[in-house]
Amino acid sequence: MNAQVDEPFVVRARGEIDFDTAPSLRRALAAALESHREVVLDLSEVTFMDCAGLGALVRARNQADRSGRRLVLRGAGRCVVRLLKLTGLHRRLAVEP
Image (cartoon, rainbow, N blue to C red; front, side):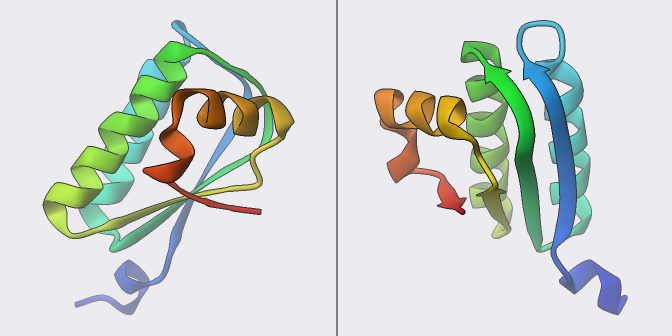
């Protein structure tokens, strides 16, 4: 197995994650989870997230669980952390500073 596959793979999201942009995030996370044991989603440049964005995160987490992979959210700003807490997803998703 290639050593790079075992290293965390970083997916960087920027701007707004909403109905228009969530599908591309969902595809990027799905592809990353197919080939890497651990995927880190860098949310440090995300300014807004709606329910479509949450759906992309839940779908990626489910994929990670099914395939024995790990999804980590990193650098989430106040608006994203607040949304995760309001929905209770902060207990289901690995969220790191």
